[in-house]
Image 1 (cartoon, rainbow, N blue to C red):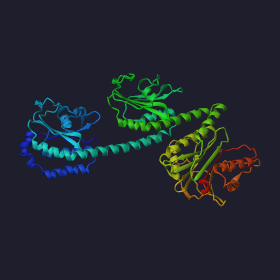
Image 2: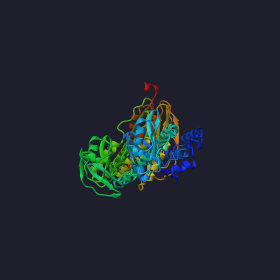
Image 3: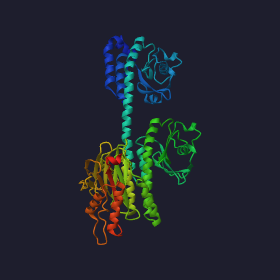
Image 4: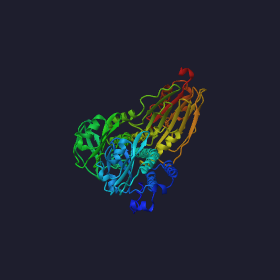
Length: 605
């Protein structure tokens, strides 16, 4: 919140001087004044509060009519009023002083105080509407660099003296570093708030699966970051040679724009073709701009990129020149990646939902898509082997597994999941869960925390009769530890090198049912030769013609029998034993098996 300016005293400087002759002598001592200034600098990190306290302190020794602190915009090389007393707010907002122009601009250019006894006789004076005759401008300098100017004005000529100049210069030398620190604090605090907002927006958008709703929420959430006036979402067509308007808003009103823009034409077309973020401060001076809206003065175009391919552009416009800043561009570049993922997830959901109503050839296409979402190869690690396989009971199913690598190449995660139901709905929900898992993996959560985060994300946008059971394991290659958390899958097996297979007692509620569910995790310090087996209930529940289930006992026996073999061979052996047992009876549930085997010393070498 902006601190309101301090109102000037009603009496004139001459009346004040008469009431307080010998101003400097009657004011607090120099030492006390500097202590007060130093205290304000050291105890205040809010820039508005610091400047208000400074205005009060200066007023005690120099009865000004107008007081202002102007800060330097390095890129534009101009001074803008950051705080003032005595100007009208309209004037304060509109004043822009180029370095070298006017009295304050001269002080900024030379780095020295400028005292003018009669501004009417000074050709460089820039009138601001205030009835003043004297002006004293002192530069604010930090490490030899001018960051702004402190300016005082009076309605009488010859009002300011050399003592005033020296004293204000002394104050400015103390204040300048405080201004820098306050600006830095403000910037860091603002960036921290922006990161929180960006995180909130990213989490929400990735959980919306309806494209129309997603577009609307993107527009609403972006306004939390940038107060745009016009906004559009354009997506590439199937040939990726044109941009199509999918959503547009003008002054808070939705509008329908039907025309297409070829890639390379106009600012949005150029941003898409070059995969380049464009900030245009004045579109009237840019020949690439297509004048669709005569009120537009500045524009920000942000490409949407998914898997190294531009899928669209976010376009923002404003009627004010130079409205969009470098900070706006940095925020949008960060958020655009998450927006692209959210759009692709929603596109995928709608595509697979429509495929549910198509013929078998459409389901075969969906099966291929599901296969591509699974890892194409297991991670290669020095101390552990990973292997997994899933077989759907129908054309497409709800079982899945995934490998997730945390930053640093130290932690590798294995996720084994079983979505409720079968067929296309389960496949769609599986794609959603897989995307949420990868999103949260960027935060490097522990095993239990990952299940908790996924559960919260699913609970925020519940889908009727849909939930998922996930077993999540974290292998620490450096510490040789395995952390396991479970949310409804059968208890995994741990087979020691000696050959004894034991159940790991770890349970939890399925994800997506209860928002407040809590999850536990167990930690094992793994030893060479140990094998950990994870599986969905389709394995022990597989039945033969007599209705007898394969069961946990047979599964443990297979694990003990093949424990010395490589991880992939153990997976093959389990599926072979199950198939032999059921004798050709069609599976009624998806089947998934995953193995983590700790390598022997001989294997590592």
